[in-house]
Image 1: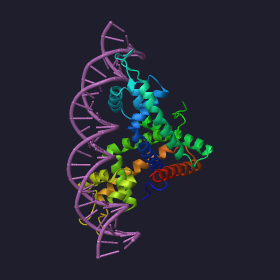
Image 2: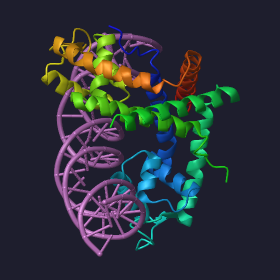
Image 3: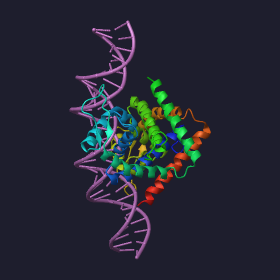
Image 4: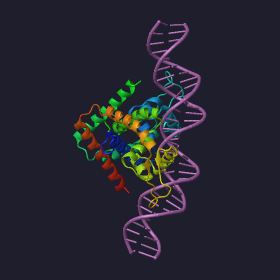
Length: 149
Length: 149
DNA sequence: TGACTCATGTCAGCATACTGACATACTCTT
DNA sequence: AAGAGTATGTCAGTATGCTGACATGAGTCA
C-alpha cells in the first residue's frame, strides 16, 4: 500500500510535537487568563511595536479576521492601543499599553520555561540542526504553494 | 527583557512549520472534499483497523468529543463502520469500509506528495536527526506535563 | 488622468473543536 | 464482595477560527 507511515512520518511527528507544545502552553497560560493567540499577539507587539492587524495575523498564523476580533477585545481590556484614524493608507499600527506589557511579562516567562523544557534533551548542535531543518521545511512548502498557482 | 526571540525560538519555528504543513495539506485535501481530521481518521483506521473513538481522537490530536462527531458523519456517509453494540466494555471498534478505503487512496497519495515536498531540502541524515529531535521534544513536554500534577 | 491590481480593515455567517457533564463498564484494592 | 478510581461513548452549550463579502486606500501602467 505504501502509505504514510505514522511512526516515521515527519509530518505526523511535526504535528505531534506541535500539539504537545500547544497543550503545554495552554496549560501554563490558562491560569494567567490568556489564550495562546492572545499571548502571541502581545509577544509580537512587544518585539515589533506598531505592527498592523494583518501583520499580526500572519505572525500568529491566523486570518486577519480572527486577529481583528482578538485585537478588539485586547483594546477593550486596555492591553493594546490603536489610533482612531490611519496615519497613512488603511493600516492601523498597534502598540502595547503599560498594562499589556505587564501582563506579557509573566506569560513570557512561563512560555520560556515551557520551551526550555521542550529542548531539555537537545544539545546546542541539535537545536541548531533542528532550526535549520524546520526552516528548510517551511521554505519548501511555501515555494510549492506559490508555485502551484 | 530576555524575551522569546521569535527568529530563533524553536517553539515559534515549530509552530511555523506545522502551520505551513497544515495549509499545504488543506490545499490538496480540499479538492477531494476532505478536511485534515477527516483524512487523519481514515489514515489511522487504515493502519490500525479496529481503533476506538478515543484512540482515534488521541491519534488525530483532537478530543474524543470532536472525533465522535466526525465518526458519526463518516459513518453516515458509509466510509467507516461501527458495530451496534460493544463486543466488550464500552469500546466500539471502528473499521474502514470499501468506500472509505477508496477515498483514502487518493488522499494518501496527495498527502505523501506534500510531505515529500516538505523534506525535499533535507538529506536522509537530516531527516533522521529531525525525527529524533521531534521525538525528544514530545517526550520532554509530556514528562513535564504529567509531572506537574 | 483613469483603469487595474492589490492589501487592508471590518462585518456577517458558518464550521470546527473545545469544555462540562453524565451514565456505563472495566480494574484494582481492601 | 464492594468501593474507589479510571476510561469510554455521548449529549449539550460555548468558543474560537475560518470563508465570503465589501469598501477603502495605495501603487502600477497604459
